[in-house]
Length: 141
Image (cartoon, rainbow, N blue to C red; front, side):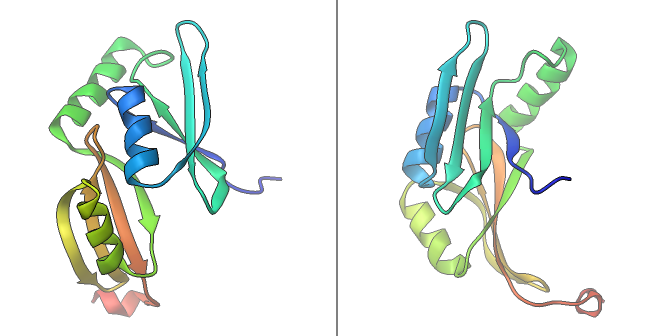
């Protein structure tokens, strides 16, 4: 039986730079950084949730070259979606992250489901920061 999601791949341009970004700017914790010859296994996690790791990976094998190139082009355009980050105060967390040098795409905005801001990591992945509030389908009408 499946108990939870434990690993999510985040494609990056440079593993060392991404590792520094996620640990120094977002406050994630380094779990593993292992060189396996032609492959590098580097994972980070949010301090309060070690059960979910982000694998920071270069676009490449086991992807074929065409698929890896699509990901590299998406990263270069800054249009790659990374993941969502939950917060209990979107405005405050947004200000802290921007002060820490994190680039933003969209300042905090009210949405039917809460307050949302969109940031970008140093590889071009979108990071959606959300302070969720109770909602129903009718809130979107």
